[in-house]
Length: 202
Image 1 (cartoon, rainbow, N blue to C red):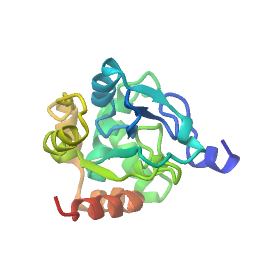
Image 2: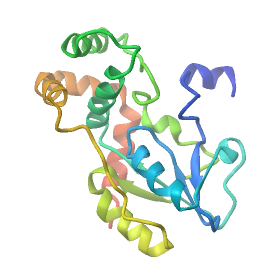
Image 3: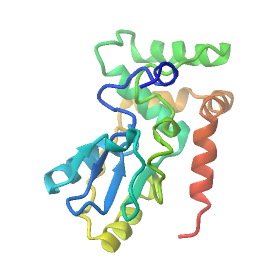
């Protein structure tokens, strides 16, 4: 990994750039993007013979392999990632104080992702792994069912999320329109990606 890449993504451990799951037949590759149903796909794919690989971190995916990934609305993904980070030993502030701290950084222009979950999803899209089939997080059941039927993939995907917790309600209620704008501005590349994929015909 180059020094520049380390500056852009200093969390190259559990969620490695170029990480994905290759089907047993070698015909489908899932690109692993944190907070985009990645745990759900890990639990589905690994027991069904898919293998984890970083082989295409630097080598282009060969012809004949269909690459798919999940895209998620960026502000909702940020809220979910904030909840995830707050549950780690690295974060000791009460959740309300943690939210205020991160929003203050956004307003001052000093915000930086604290871990891989808060890293822009576009960071994980490498030119060696061009995505051909996009699944929408918000329509994951239907989108994956269509993909699964076409390529003979296991399913359904069991989707788990944290959207019902008290902390999730707190952060949703706390965010002002300006806060949401600032989150979207920081994740501009993700917003552009999401809007482009959402507009594709189905």
